[in-house]
Length: 67
Image 1 (cartoon, rainbow, N blue to C red):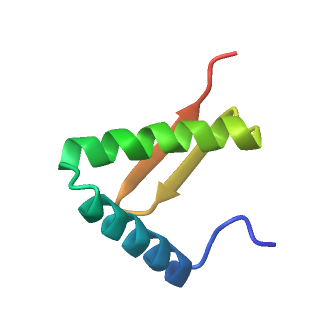
Image 2: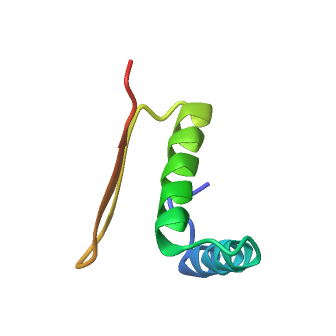
């Protein structure tokens, strides 16, 4: 299995998250807060203590869990 999901999978996941956020009537800050919390929870669940995702010409998202 590849370390990265395909662009198509990213788009499908993004669409699902956007639809769910609309259903929940969340504001932008609530969406980002929820996604950040979900990312931390996923990293904890799957044992990623130090994870970084970089998208060229866009930015970097990092997770560093405390010991």
